[in-house]
Length: 149
Image (cartoon, rainbow, N blue to C red; front, side, top):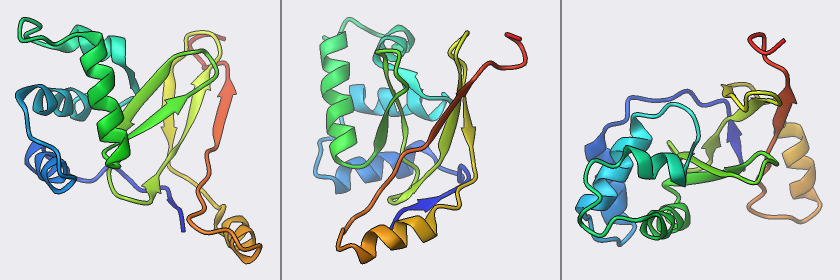
């Protein structure tokens, strides 16, 4: 069952690197640096933004490699892929399996803020009684933030 509203726990690069190893991936300098970028970015971030934050692009790091790593991280449950209807995929660390939060997105400036509330457990249980397993959900709000009003 999906759990909502988890707060960002004290997570460090060592625990993330351990999750990479447990997922059966080789721990490369590129993967470690990408995890550091994701860890240091509190909001969902695009692959382009990740690429701009890379220190050393001389070791073969390019946008294609970033997308490949992100896909591997997503398959391993390390990151969540978020799409807010603007054609840009964004990524954020998945702090713990089954835990997530929702977002509110400004229609004008595209600012994304997390919302740490969720009361959907009764609805999830209802869907499970219909015979569904591994039920998950997404809930995003859109509006105009106070800065853009």
